[in-house]
Length: 296
Image (cartoon, rainbow, N blue to C red):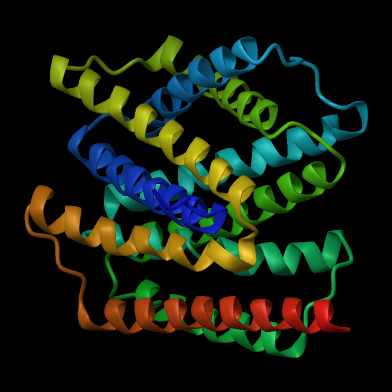
């Protein structure tokens, strides 16, 4: 029996992550009129439970690296804003695939924030890709006053920006040797503590079905988080990151079959194409740059 390569394992994990996050988007919508803060709480509560069990099972520390504490707080704050933006867009936009592609702007903003705060250089071709991807996002957002989805579109875009900032902090902490599982634990705990007061004073009663859907939101979110973490332990970003955009395809399919026949409009498809092509271009460019460095 042929041995499965780490690259193949990484691709499988990142596809599983994309599938999990598309499931999360569907369950967010299926849960109905539950307030966004309540949905966010359940999304992180399940992840907190799984992260706690994982740390205990591996007998790992529940203490952060001393020099990473402030970055955990920044990462968690930015990440929570990103989740709120994504959930609001997913709930309010007619197409969950539109919300998914706006969230996928995060890798481009990770490049920008890494250049600003981590002093990592952005090459001219990378800058061009970021600019064109931003143009693609405008086709999805359609920034005109006649667009009834302008606010959720902008929130979804800002969610992608915040996620990019969060991933920059994760990258920085990873370079300092912080445990990725603890990072998931800290973010989940932070998010639950911030959203818990809303539930205490404004809890929205839920049906049994809504309870099940929100638990599934958390299960899918946790599955997505741990799968993508595993993916990048098997293979580097330059080899597998482009497969994460399969999330948009999975989300569009689930939106059509499970959420009342959702079909994005023509301008959204144009935006999808532009953003995905820029992601593919960045993928190919990063691989070439790595090979060039290795040959020197």
